[in-house]
Length: 220
Length: 411
Image (cartoon, rainbow over all chains, first blue to last red; front, top):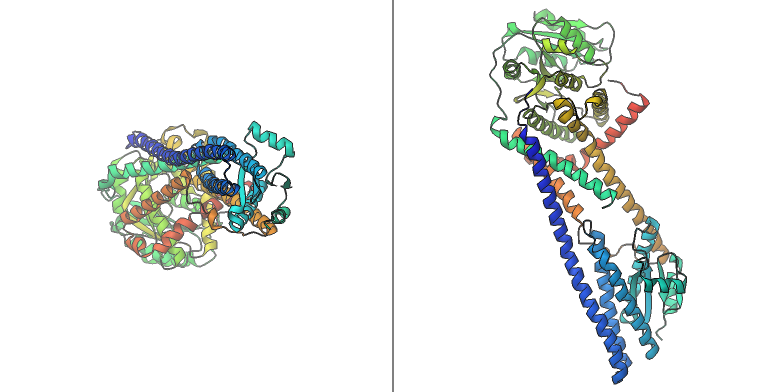
């Protein structure tokens, strides 16, 4: 039996393949476009980090006042924080490309440097800000951990909105297999996420204890 | 790429393939879509199985008597499957009035349409057999436009026409009217690639010789009108579709009746698939296209719904936990800053498929000339897409459950 329009089957396969590939290409392009934005964010962050480090050294050499230094580091930390939120959104929207994931480790290192610089500044100068480091699970968090992280983020975002430049909020992924972060994890005996470290001394692991953050930061 | 993404892309590709195929076939054959071979009248026996159809049987017989076809070339055989109502009495009145109307009353109720249909075919005296439902009314030109398909090609064993929803007053009936129109359009496109896989019960025309050769309708199958075509194709024959004429059929106006009807269709479809499973991806058109197409038609909705349900449940569960934890923490349960205005590529693919489906339906309604449904019933179209079609996977799940339990019957 001769089939009518037999060629239509192959033409449809060809057409579907072309459309599907075109969709993938557009998708990859869109995600890469976001990836390019991420690269831009990262580049700025690197420059800012370098700037921050040099600022610390210059401050010591030229005896620049602490208030100015605090102001600058807070400004920079705020940028890092809001960029982190944007980065997370890009990350959750990426289906085809892994660019943001590979960049994540580098970005976490920059945040770690920021934490170190902020801590050193606190030691050098009379402290008028607090550091709140938020450690979370990046790779395949369970539903429970993911939900807990959402609640932690919301709470920390409230705190940040309330106290502004008086706190430096640094979100860092705890499971990116970076030696420097592993050292921190060993020091604080950290195994589960999410958790918060306030001023390098107080650890908050449970949702119910989040309200203790405000008790630990005193601006009077 | 994780499993969910793979699953989504597979779903997308299958949907794109089917849409591409239909678009290509339509573009190649759009001038011939209403074409029908001019046939010459030859005697036809019209077999009408009937069970408790007292409300509609009279109109159905009247419509057959009014066909634009030489009266002496038509005999109407109504086979009453031991109705509990007065269907047989109504038909008896017609037999007194018209010499070409005959009534056979089955000794016991068979519970399916296939057996009374076969009884009618066995007593038919003509070489062409039309099978008509007792609640359907074919257009006057139905027979004369359909018979040419059987006469022009000896490989054609059966021919069907557009089945349209007769009643279109209630919202629920309009939904079915949209569906019937889209099915008619799709079936004509399948006709252009020799892949018509069903000659629906409301009105179909067959060659008696071929029906006897392949063994008449399967009395064990819940959708004998699908099974008979698959058997024809298996034996090297094919079915055709005539878009230029139609039969109107009464559609269920109650959800419960509709649900039961669709379960029966699904169970019959699965029975047929199981019967011919060894020919899957083999045995010419049947295994190479009809079976995969039928299977994809059945499961693609289930795939989509499974994916949607899984992602929705996961999202709802995470949102529930996040809300619970946020309440513990004394923070907001919704934050504007969490709104993600960077949709994933998967969202774009999903939107594209939705739009493609919409365009296909719109074109289908335009071609089968359901302009009122198309233009004046936008809410019907939305509900059709977002709700009505979403019920199909649930029907499939229920049907599979009933098959496993062995708990199903024709009526």
